[in-house]
Image (tube, rainbow, N blue to C red; front, side, top):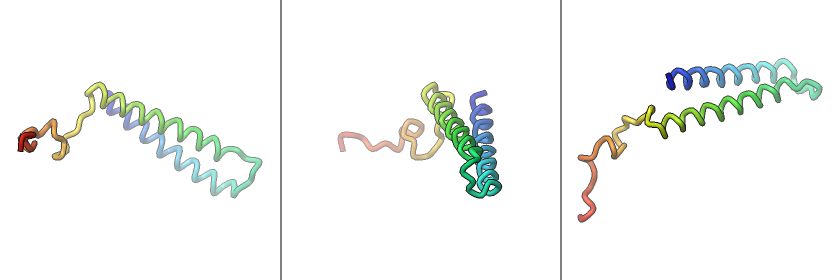
Length: 83
């Protein structure tokens, strides 16, 4: 379930980025239109929610690393401390 939430937030950030680019091109720098700033605020909020969700997933153990350099998953690759 957590991975679905992360995926939805990522898609929302990309959609907000696309919307902001559209407003940037469409408004052509008119200072009276604030749509670009609102899109930026939404994108920043979504990105913060995404980072918080990923941090929660890592802290709770629902998201883990299977990278070969992760020492917890590959203890046989550790160098003994007394050498």
